[in-house]
Image (cartoon, rainbow, N blue to C red; front, side, top):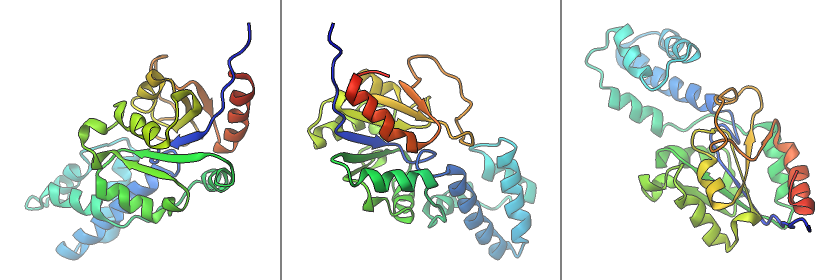
Length: 237
């Protein structure tokens, strides 16, 4: 029986945790909040920042600012205000070394490059700007710009990219890092999926079922060209 041949014509990336270390953004946001509070209440920046960082390192998520104001007895401070500062700050973040290398290589190939990213629209735009991602991608989809129904694991952002690129699913590869939402919709559509696990990511040690796991797992984006070449040649790994 003849093995089906595939020709990958587009690569779609997730952004947070895939192209850069998402913890860098968190720390950058904590600095912005700590700077604001230290000026407003004439408190030590280092004390505020270390509380935020220590709690995060110890696994606290989502309630970080609630815990902070409780520890500092800042009962009059509105949590929504701190969240707003965090979301709107201009982040100090940088691409992973393998990200920069592979994007520069892929730009020279006959491939379309797309980006699908969840998150509050202004936050994502600030990240994209700080990382200079518009220099690399033919299409960037911030799902929040289209409404909550476009946030992953929805199939809608993937269908939108396929439509704009004029491609079939089996001619497309999607790379992400979070198995809880990144791969299930893409797999249902027939898009090849790749999970990046560098060993230091937020979701690297998350175990999942077959439905949510990617087709392939790599530890560096530098493996991507070889992986795509094998898919093109054999239709399978």
